[in-house]
Image (cartoon, rainbow, N blue to C red; front, side, top):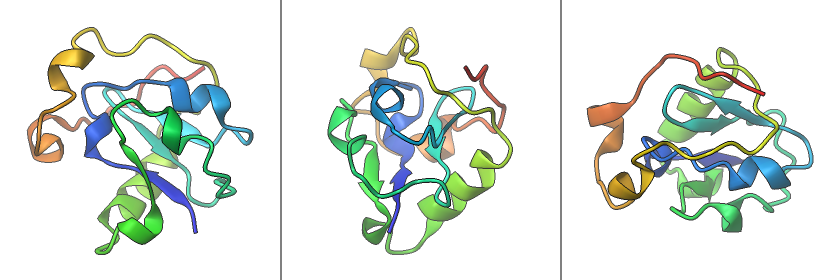
Amino acid sequence: MTYVVTDACIMCKYTDCVEVCPVDCFYEGENMLVIHPDECIDCGVCEPECPVEAIVPDTDDTDGKWVELNSKYAAEWPNITLKIDQMPEADKFTEEKGKLAKFFSTKPGQGS
């Protein structure tokens, strides 16, 4: 098992999870984070740190779309190991639904 980041992260990009990850398996896109499923050790310390509950076990990903998305972009985006500020309007988007179709960006973030 591994953990994955879902669309609840899009347009928020809180990085409290990055700060506690013992294996630095988070990767940064322009407006969300992903977890590299082959690097995640299933420790679970990141899940309760996410204020928008965007991190879930892959067993909750019944159709596999989040495992696929996390795998694909973890291979393309830079690794992030330090906590940074969330997106400027994060609070506005925390309750937004359907963010994958509306706002997802394939562009990489800065990494750290």
